[in-house]
Amino acid sequence: MNLANKLTLFRVIIVPFFVFFMCFTGIEHRYLYALILFIVASITDMLDGKIARKYNMITSFGKFLDPLADKILVASALVCFVELRWTSAWVVCIILAREFVVSGVRLVAAGSEKKVVIPAGWLGKIKTAVTMVAICVILFMHILEGFGVIYDAGQWMGIYEYVPQALDFPIQIISDILMYVSAGLTLASGIKYLYDYREFIDPKK
Figure 1: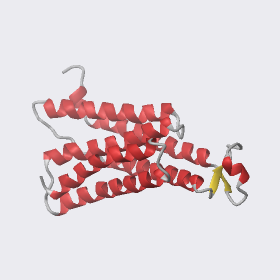
Figure 2: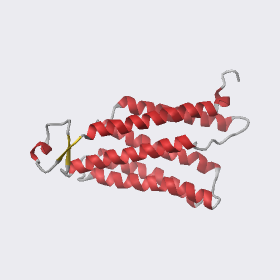
Figure 3: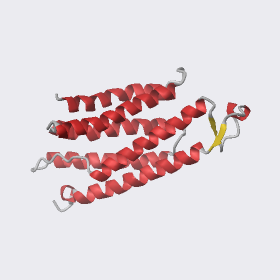
Figure 4: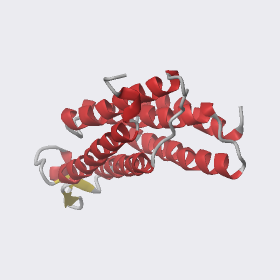
């Protein structure tokens, strides 16, 4: 296994630890640790592709695992967000539905006579980058909230009501906007993906 694929696999290995910090309430500053892990995983996402292209390490395994690793990481974060009520379930459903559809097309293409391994498209890469940034920003806002630096302008109950130095900040509104943008890009990239590879899902064949 080459270096690029090892970085991609490392991204997958990070996911369980990220989920642990997101969901296990007994750890102080757990969101900070989760954010650090998510950023590390995101950096490997940038590095593995560059290394693969620069040193001619592009393989079919890498084309398969790289987008899959992104999906596992992002999906895990979004499911945790729903659990924590940081985002709406319907937004996450749109994003996950697109991933299932795209994965299905990939399987059909790989199993066809042409045995096509479909790489991630440019719009899909933009979608992934925007979603990862959105996740980082949302996590960062809740980290600041946990440290008492800001509090959600829409939530008048809680400890931050009694912390005068905390800044009034629309955490949920910003989170919703970021997730709506991510969902919109996800839907657009999914439609483009289906159009570009429509030959593999043609009902006449």
